[in-house]
Image (cartoon, one colour):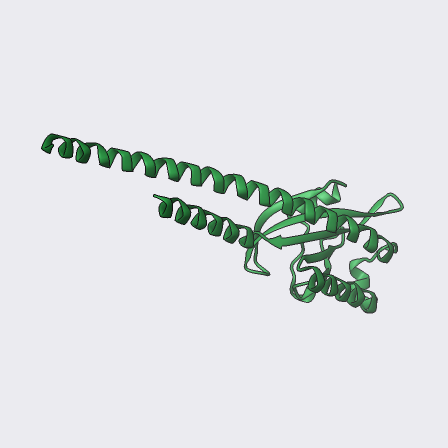
Length: 192
């Protein structure tokens, strides 16, 4: 009987290590899978929202706005675009930004357009100006968090008159993944 107890205590730590490593790898894989799943769904939703806004802003931006208009005059039109962005952002929880081909921001749902820097070098804007869908996940200094950005061109008379960009925080997705991982681990260890 004493030999059996000794043998169990020699094998038991190995089983614990195997179980722990198995749980860790399943949890890691699951977290990675769910993150990709959530990001893909988020991307699809942002594209749909951007396409709807692309149509709406296509009418509003049918006449070109130049940087001179911003400095010299058309402040009412710029203010209307910015207010429209803020209204949409509040209703949808999505950041909406309108950028001119020059990179000047004329509307943003969560930021002050007077304080925003030129967006010409942002990867998603560059792609949209090439008449493609621009997609980027990166840090936003304006909102101080990681964001997913989708940018689409607004085309009028075969020319890009602006870029519509929608974005949401991916921090919420990271928090959901952590929550799912913690629930999974808690459930696994409570079943043991």
